[in-house]
Length: 80
Image (cartoon, rainbow, N blue to C red):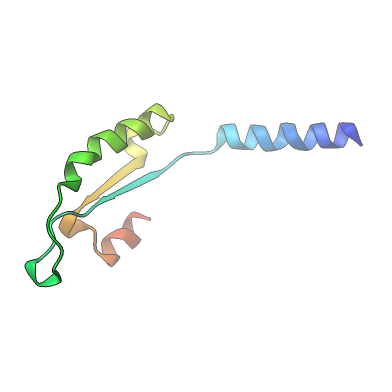
């Protein structure tokens, strides 16, 4: 039984090591006045978040950034 558990753990670990990582950063901060929301500088946070993902071994070309007008339902679904 111990051998089966060990084999299952080794297999699970090896699959995780080979997994490709993808990131999607959505930064919305420019809200239209009619929404009642005040604008925030979320775009300033994008480099911080992207660097955190890069430190976690995400590939730069596997990180997609959507800012403000790009972050529509269609844009998010396309990015996914």
